[in-house]
Length: 398
Image (cartoon, rainbow, N blue to C red; front, side):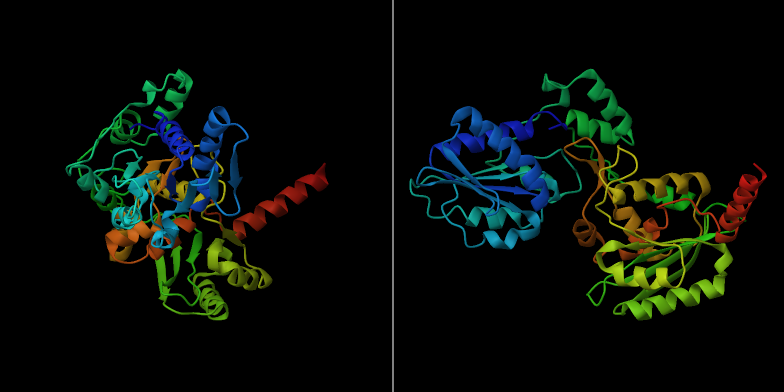
């Protein structure tokens, strides 16, 4: 179905009706936060219309109950393993199922054993179509009913909302997929960095403008790499990878790179907030222009779901405008595997890192570190300080 066609409304109504019948239900979303902010709220609205005051909503326990047997459990694809002990689930609703892991069906169907009436359980999957996903193949099997609808089949969608959606879509394929609910099987669905884009962006001369930025994707002492990427306007200058490194060790590496490339030309250092706070504090204490960036934080432009989407889209635009010299193999593979979709709120979002990892075989740490350098324009420190001096002199003259 297209975005805003009414998938969530219909699924929430079905959940409410089955709950009143005393059934056991599971609602799954990409994250626990999305579960609370989308399905939970919509189901509560439906229950208030059907059985006001007769149900119990226990948000802390992530469940809604009705009578002696009716219950709706809420879970996320991040915590899919927690469902393995469930039984007698009559209905499972999977929101944005294209973002779910490929073992979803086997886990959910096993929860439907031992149903008291002997009937088979029902799995309802909600999503806009994506041709490069396990769901497409699954839906072509027998005993699967597909219901499709375009966005304007929902009569509550206004022309202004349709126009906003049209402007948000980055290309024609995304428009067909997100508005009409069509499967665009051209091999490039939702791709930000196609092979052509990655090839064309290298066919440029190096921009001689001074300045460089540093992006750091930290994994702490985890299984993924700590990656430092240094770039100028259109050239990758340095890539450093460390499987395990303390904040002190990472700080030493960054200081060495800045000493080598010149502190006066440094624009900014952007660090992934998840594991980078200790490193950030060390660099700030040393007097560097460092910032922590929460990938899930609020974007500066409303068309993006979060910072991660804005950084990647900004990077794509600048690749097309300035080019990019020096992309290594990992960067190209990770960027090519990066896909975008529209969220439930019609905002551009990037698919989860876990899904990119399934495509390339490792976490997209190098691409994330590069994307972090696009949090702000490159302006050398020396130029910034010069402008500040000029501003102070101008103020004195007044």
